[in-house]
Image 1: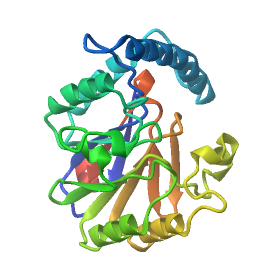
Image 2: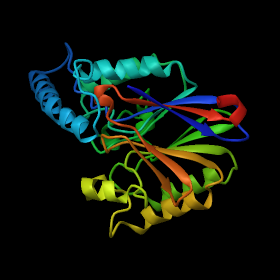
Image 3: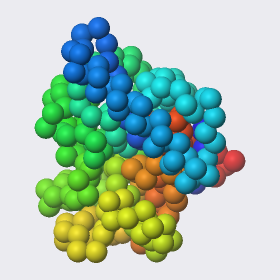
Image 4: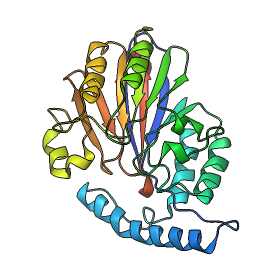
Amino acid sequence: MITEYKIICSGIKKKVIYHFSDTHLTEYDELSSKEEIDKAIHQTESWERVRADFARHGAEPYGEYEKRAPGYHFCRALETAKDGDALAIAGDLLDYVSPANIRFAEKHLSAFDKPYVAVCGNHENSLELPQTGALSQMARPVSVCDLGDLQLIGVDNSKRNVSAEQNDALRALLENGKKSVIVMHVPVMCESNAHKLKQSGVYFQFNYEGCPDENIDFINIIDTHSQNVVMVLAGHLHYSNYALISGKVPQFVSSQGIIGNINKYVIGEENEIF
């Protein structure tokens, strides 16, 4: 299911950005060991129940199409995103890091011919990911996809924290004055979504009670540079969510990619997108 949003932003040429998260790939192939095959089958079967529960929680469709394999939905998402100018993958692309999952994701991402930024989710470990190739962005604390008059900034907050070094890098990128989209896995809890996120539990919150000071600094950096931050894109919740960070910056959480959900953002001058 594609959910489309229009974002008015002066000073940039019209662009289409696609965004998905939480595809939770559980692949195996002819090179996989029996142990790896058994794990992939077990995890796939486990997700068949869990993703249905999330769909019911989010009041989203869950029929024969949504029941298709995670790998199918990942490939369909990439095919859909070829229609855009760039892609943001907001974590949990893989359900776990394994040779077969890496081979599958690398193969299809390598064939994707548009710019993209991808970040780690809590199901991935940056230390276990390839340092080169299509997945290497996910291994970086901060990454950038430059689209000329717009930049996509990936920040790894998959462990529900960020470092002072990541904050310094983010601040420097936002200070260059370029319009920016920030991509991360765990969403910020805002006044408008606090009730929902608190219901989901602390596991789904970035700025939870007692969180590190760096997390609060991260939000303050976004607030300070809100004139340059077009939006924040996240995942992790497995249901769609919209909120305003500090009452200013739109945050969009994409619903679970494991059943085929993907967001589309048309960004530009009002007369270009309406």
